[in-house]
Length: 410
Image: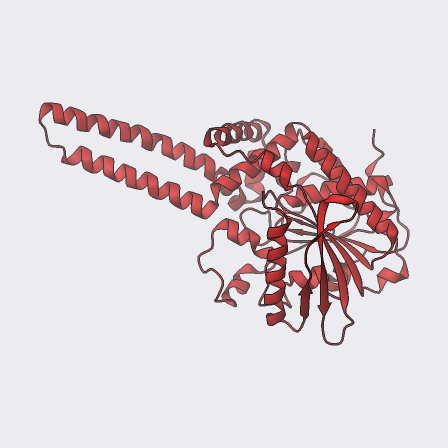
């Protein structure tokens, strides 16, 4: 039996080293979402974004080559050098703890397996009342989750009608009647079905939504052994890094479905070392496009709610969430603790913010004008033409801790 959540974080004062809010050395643990791509893609994304952010801000951001972390074959990392006028340079180790091999193992290529997983997960959400709860937490998120279902359900009547039209054509040929009406009906049904399928897959990225959604349901129904082992290893690595006391800030970043994984990693690290948030480095947590209610709303996910409870009671943890109203894959403005039915002893934990995608995209004409939801969901990791409002590279590599940057107490 684990100890009560409140015992995992003591309430000692944070050391003066980190209360100043300045950073010269930082360590980032970036936990990716449900994406089969590995560190090479994310290293390239970070390097390209840093170059663009340097052009849009006063910072000079250099990104080194990715290298395997010594003693940890499952983690890749790269150095980030951040220099800005009136500030000393900041050196950041940006670690990418991999779990993409696990994702690929559950990235079913066949449509039938995807449909089976989707229907099983939908039944799980429906019978436990989670769909009703999700509807109250975000209409856009509810529609996005149902997009694959709508695609499937609306295509089935279309297929039946198409068969009926084909039958009418055959009967008309046999009777010698005009084929015009049956042929026009069949053609219109084919066009409507193809347009709907193309638009739904392009805009909602239904294949990715379906796989991610099914994986969350699988986690809630029972442990995924290889994932549990990986999360435990990430937590142990996080504890070791903090205990080395080499950094001014240790920042855990979770994006998309990675917000669920990063929450588990942080909670497990705090269980391994209850004083983790009170040591030399400032312990910070940045979530981007969080989708924690997908997991916490499921009655079977009690273990995850227990992990959330650990973070709820942790005074020394600075948690800031950025989720945008344009992002229907995320839950903008939905407090993860409140959604899970947990009480928090201090206000503004986590601090809920929006990156302001509407203003960002309007200020960056070279960005895609007609973005699908998957592309919008990736914008958290890209450069911002409005760095005073949102700057991912200043948060992960700049001269201020997350708490100092956003005025978070704790």
